[in-house]
Length: 193
Image 1: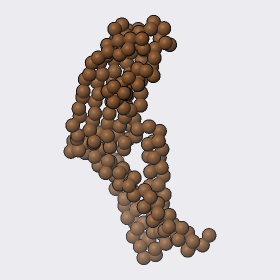
Image 2: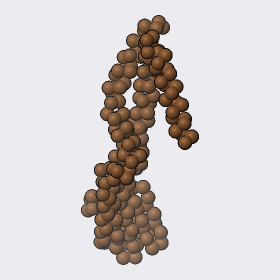
Image 3: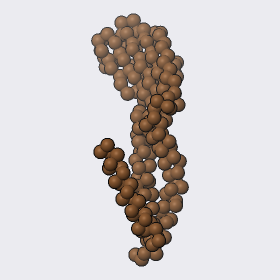
């Protein structure tokens, strides 16, 4: 493959991969700042506590295999608009506990098996908690984790195609390489400090 072809392909990839990933790079850059400076970018966390009763037939069977997990989960989803994935469903002798988690959100229910009464605590971390958890991939699901991987691959490709393009610009090649090396040295020095 000739140098012209490599330069043309690199330019094409660099431009279009940059445009495809523009929003992703912008999102992860902005939320990287909000995570590093959480004290400046806090949102108000809210906690709501609710109490009530659930259908006793779903939860008080002595045979724990007959406890209706689906009905219990859907009760909280439908009646209290609980959202997120069920991250934990524990059945103990006297109590059932279940947790729902999503970015910036958690709901925990504790059900007394003897009388089917429950206590539900819903905590929301607000917008900043939501976007910061998305940045980390916390409780965001497999699809979002795949997007994070795609974003990382796109950023690597954009960096490599940009470096390849730099190598084809004779007037800026040496200065660009020197700046890249200085950047590496600064990063390493900051790590040591």
